Amino acid sequence: MIPLLQVTDLETTFYNPKKDLVAVRNISFSVNPGETLCIVGESGCGKSLTSLSIMGLLPTKGGVTNGSILLKDEELTTKSEEQMERIRGNKVSMIFQEPMTALNPVLTIGFQLRESLMIHRKMSKKQATEKSIEMLVKVGIPSPEERLKQYPHELSGGMRQRVMIAIALACEPDLLIADEPTTALDVTIQSQILDLIDELQQEMGMGVVFVTHDMGVVAEIADRVMVMYAGGVVETADVDAIFDNPQHPYTKGLLHSVPDVDNPSQELKIIEGSMPSLDDEITGCRFHPRCPFAMEKCKQQEPPTFNLNSTHESKCWLQEVTESERNTVTRG
Ligand code: SF4
Ligand code: MG
Image (cartoon, rainbow, N blue to C red; front, side, top):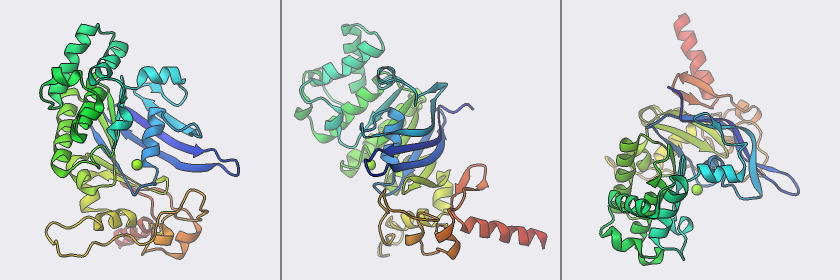
């Protein structure tokens, strides 16, 4: 299958008068049509910057400094802002944690929904209004005709989130990027929104990149998982392998910080220490100052990415040990 999205060696940098700071370090991944890839990691690991890089929405003091982002057969990194405007909201859409940043407070819901349909789908005002109502129904908003006349502040947080999703999906994008869209919502609304994204995804066959720090959400929606730490990818695998057979010590740490439903009295273990900041110089493995398994080598040499099989990779020296043990055993 030709991937819908193919990101190769992506590097994103913040320009700084003293020294440029690399925030996303040569990461590669792909998303197939109909697939959900979850990008997970603590805040500041580069997961949001990865999605903003794809959208061409990086702050002006930052930019993509290396690598390629292919959406189907279109290279996004070389597009002008004008060209990206035609792609955003059309072929690729994004939803955020805080819908107020995506919605314009001085324009009605109806105007905002119609606008992208009229621009990208060349619909008449009448057609766009009909489609807008259809989208509001789809995202579970009651009395949609009334809602079209309202302004964002007149809606509850959950309703605004649904409106943002309706706008993002109105043009039936090939790819949806969702950056912690449910974090600020209560659990019931969160699960309704996740179901909704899943439903619409199955109906439209779009690929989804879902950014989150919540392993519970990952378990619910991911097909594949990419774990990021300090700007780089440390482990990628199918969702079952991430939960049943995690390899990277950081992934294991993230999983231990999830409360165990079968053993609620178990104390939550969190990974000690904190993530390095962008200007910290760290040699070797960037996780070594926090890693309970760190070896001497980890402090000197950055580990390569080891392939456990065709769908599972881990960037950790322990994998080399496991591999050599495996070889010793086979050699008998
Ligand atoms: Fe820990 Fe070493 Fe693996 Fe890094 S390479 S995660 S320090 S064991
Ligand atoms: Mg974020």
